[in-house]
Amino acid sequence: MGTELIGRARAGDGEAFRVLTEPHRRELQVHCYRMLGSFQDAEDALQDTLLSAWRGLGGFDGRASIRTWLYRIATNRCLSALRAAGRRPAKAWDIPGVEPPEPTRLGEVVWLEPFPDALLEGAFPVPPGPEARYEQRESVSLAFVTALQVLPPRQLAVLVLRDVLGFPAGEVAAMLDTTVDSVKSALKRARAGLRRRQQQREPAPEPGSPGEHAIVANFVRAWETADIDALVALLTDDVFVSMPPLPFEYEGRDVAGRFCAALFGAGRRFDLVPTRANGQPAFGAYLRGPAGTRHGTGLYVLTLAGDRIRAMTRFENSVLPTFGLPRSLPE
Image (cartoon, rainbow, N blue to C red):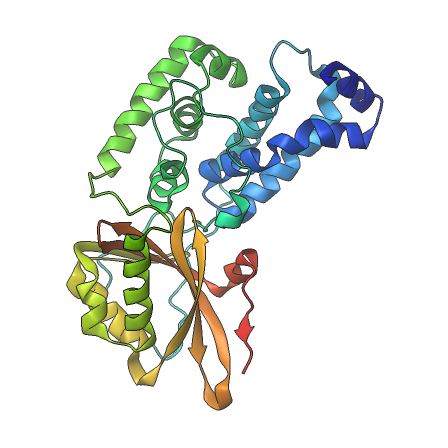
């Protein structure tokens, strides 16, 4: 059946090509996202991958599977994008009426975007290879994707292909047109770089578990009532707040509380609409205005540790449609 489909696709049958590639589309999109850290850039890379595969199907020799061949194309498309240095620049503070506290530091990965959980369905159809080191949920978390972004491009590609997807070293070497020794060396350096940025934390509760529901309910209650004391009580001592593409980052419960207090200043109040991003609880935030208007101001993604919130990432309202959320709520 595969040989017949390939033959039909090579002859220009678009439906045959779709049948060949569709089972891998979601996982390729997630692969591009891990490498690029941006949902929009990943979508562009996926489209480039499928177009390149359609045009280059005559060169597919069958020695590797269609899946491996597509990963080779996608990985190299992402590497080209990373080397092009056309990433989103940092933005200046632009939240009217809010004066933020002095940031702890300025972030590096200002192009980071969230990935909707709804699009993760079907993204892991093939169990990872035996050498994979990361669980599927961990491998799409914001913390992991952010840590990947600071690795050199070749190291990033090798780590994702080997430790996330579990491809054998020989297949990775073929994908990247290099040697097995070069792959092993890049993987060793990538693992060391990742370890320097990762910290041991209490694990998050399982998605949909009573523990997660309890934290989320308490967060929503505190946020919608602007109860700073209740909100701060939910945070770990070393909680981390970031807001790409704004570079401002805050570390520590005290400064995170002051940042939230600034958001709630001048009587600003919000309604939250739940969703999920990167395997984590997330919320569209809508600012209550006069006459019942509620305009979307952004998306917040929570990273949990035990029964506390250890990170909160705010994204701009431009990401709301990706999650099926409206720009404003009805009166």
